[in-house]
Image (cartoon, rainbow, N blue to C red; front, side):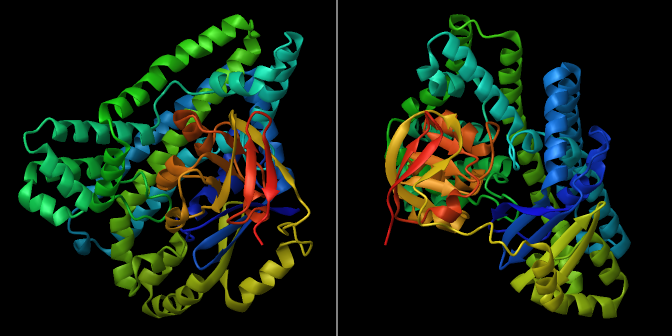
Length: 518
């Protein structure tokens, strides 16, 4: 088995990520030819995760799933139906858990049973939810590569190859509004409601001051709208570890909308994008006489783009709902909630049942929060810290530095997500705290974007990501905001540095380094 660096993300703990590895190394066999990821390995140092996958088995899964989808529309329908089915079931579970009262009165066994049910339900969705990233985003983007090659060939026969970037961006776009855009549309409606009131000017001034207490005191009806909005969409910026959206953060977003001016125009722009995209796709398909299989796969990519983001939202809602359970477990073990997220379910169960074990885990968690690693084989998770972790890293991670940067590289290649060409200054944005360094016109470079980075994405002139294909979050947002985007570069965050001047050529999927920062 050969482990290969595959992803890195900030703001991560062992939970909830380890649950996905139960499904990828065991339960995904249910929907493949029996193949599973033979081994995955993760190193977390001060909440920054680096992931390594057995590359041969990972590629085999991606290739198998893509071929099944390409050749068997019924299998593709089964995937979509099951993602929606298990999403509904997980969302119902999350609603039930979030409504649980008096958690302190639950016995340890009841807490563990809830946690165990959560792992099972999340795992059911994870099995099917793995399909989009496996066919389009780990090492090889099977779906994106195939569509790109066939569309280029078709356009070449028509003498229209120069239109590839533009046509590809439109034809592969989803006609369904993402939940990020649904949140903004709802937010713009709140602003329009405020603008229709007699004291709109005073209210807008209070909002831009960003003081929730003052809003609650002087404008209780507005505060109620804001509270309802955070209740409905608070999970959006949660990612894997939170926190959820606060009213103060919502006030900041509303303030940005007000500064952009003409709220009605912002609303109309959002709505018109989704109103027109279907007509644009049909016009291009008719113009270039799009072959039936290529049209099918472009529709597949558009649906996977939407459903990948949708199921991520369901995951995040469940993380928010489970925080109450995790906090109560943490309290009983004498840990903070972050501490218990550095444990896996069997360890939690063991610690709650044995006071001495609980004390041992408290000490181990302290070490883990500095640095730890976990290994997954056959759906079983092993966690290591201290010397054992360092020894395992030395054993499993290739000594040849796959992640080495090179000052000699002048060009990075990826895949077109949305066409266009722009120059700008690089800003590496991996976690929410990095948003502060973004200025309008900068190029956002990230391992992979999530909804918690949307503020930075709106400031950016273009996006470049290490991971992902046509179904990635960055691809979705680039289409919604109509900004050039190149995804799947593998190493952009490790080659580029803050301050580098680059050109993003999203017509050809190339990032050119114009001037490096000294």
